[in-house]
Image (tube, rainbow over all chains, first blue to last red):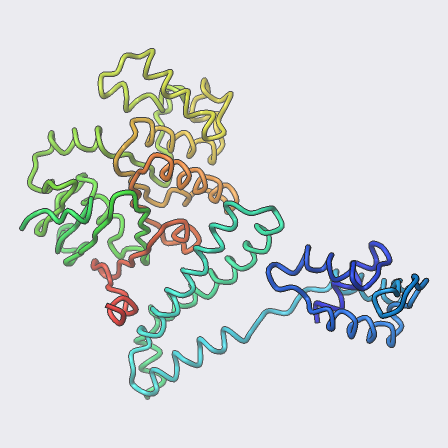
Length: 174
Length: 232
């Protein structure tokens, strides 16, 4: 969902050819995961179909990369709305952690095994992000901050869960 | 038992009670030279007590503490005091600067206590102010420093005598997130530059992530992580 809005945001800055748009996206948001060119053009096609962009002047030559894309009023409004709306929390990881812990208790296995393994994995990722925060650009640091704080929330949940295991075990097995 | 030369610092089956309250119940921990080791765990788990034993501030009721090939828990207080002064540096949650002294006098204190000449101790102290972003604050007293500045002065004081081991107990505990991160950046950078071994006690995962490795203290014992057991 963020790719179309990120592309729209880039087009609000200035109209652009698909190729230049992909280059800008990869520079600002790619972070080691470049956007496939096909996805750029299919996304632009959908945005044009929905009236959020329109095709401006077409340069010499042929092919989709010669088209210049311009954001419409509708596109500008959508970017504005998106930027001012809070993002919903990411529930999937929490669900996985929770399900594994409860299942381990139900199956009479020690959930601390899983929690310690998960904790070690989280800490390893946190160390990587911490090093990135220490040495990276401000853009890298902001992205790493986000990752670190989310990992921290999970780690605090794991600590709390270890502290609550006796109560959880009694409740689940009763 | 003898020294384990693979490690600079070790606690072996350390047991210590305060009255009827057990604080350490057979804690084992080993740190290699140059390693930054985080000691984490819930409040009251014994992690600060373990740090105090490793640093020769407290002596365990039983068990052994080894540093640089020597057993230190059997040494008398004067010998351990000398060891702390000459080989160890300390940073605590609240900088614990001497309020009557200026920032540079606080930093110079370990050198002055080690009988350095005042002029050279102050010159050495001043050299740390630039490294830690404290330029211009040399003449201020602790009451005239922000929390982050005071903690950086405390860090300079801990590092000025170039200790072999830096013991840091919740060094960012009194600071906001960004200031704490800055202090940890400086602590890690300085320790790496100097090759200092760091024992970092913290209950915050974000602070522990600055270390190379983490051990967890639970109920007075260093919990062997299941993941280590599974892979060993």
